[in-house]
Amino acid sequence: MNANKGKLIPYFRAMQFVDTHTHMYLTQFDEDRDEAIERALNQGISKILLPNIDKTSIEPMLKLVDRYPNNCFPMMGLHPCSVKEDFKDELAVVRSYLDKGGFKAIGEIGIDLHWDTSTLGMQQEAFRQQIIWAKERELPIVIHARKSFDEIFEIVDELNDERLTGIFHCFTGSFQQAEKIIAYGGFKLGIGGVLTYKNAGVAETIGRVDIEHLVLETDAPYLSPVPFRGKRNETAYTYYVAEKLAEIYGRSIEEIGRITSANAHEVFDLA
Image (cartoon, rainbow, N blue to C red; front, top):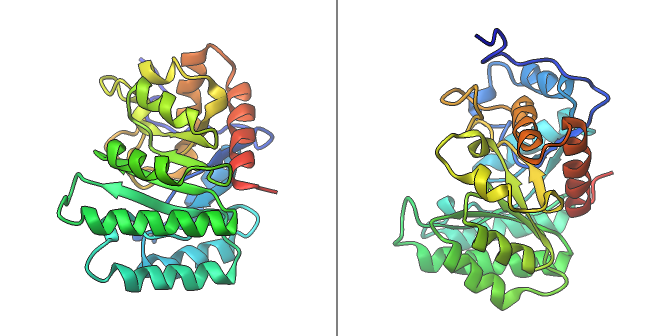
């Protein structure tokens, strides 16, 4: 029996990883947020990208950035699950913050047809508008796609040009969908805990994709990797996603960290 199963194994601060997508500002971390950040830093996750959800998440997100300015970097956007009848008011808030500057990306944005298909038209409008803002500001976008690849591809096909870059967050699509995303030229695939799920099929798909197209993420507090599946996810668990990629590609975890971190720096223009 593996005595370390389910336990966080301290790594080396000298090894640098980037968690390109984590919600460590949410209430699930209110009791131990500083400790969770410290665990991440001890695992070598030195850069942490924070996607916004809606106007209610802006203040806690920016508070975390203020507390860890050398490690935490904010995005600004309206999550598709927060697109309701008042979405234009929400978008006005997003734009007001974008005008202030200081954000690494517009995200997370996209289309989600898992929870509510009745808002599709509004989601499409919000997605399209935020892509336009990203291109105007030369910022990458971070795309949330759940049961919506066709709808998202339709809009990206329409608006794609050399100014459009970003991440398809939590990629769980087919190899053909991965190929289409890569063919856009400016996008990479965000790979998180689902990669480690035995029957998810993501590992088999990703094994056919060149690692130059991947970045690491957690989506904490959601989608914890094995051996923490079913528990609260956190940025420190980026390590376990990297470990699985090392197994898939037959490379060292140091090499996985180096390549995926370089990819993240390229997309987000990290210092």
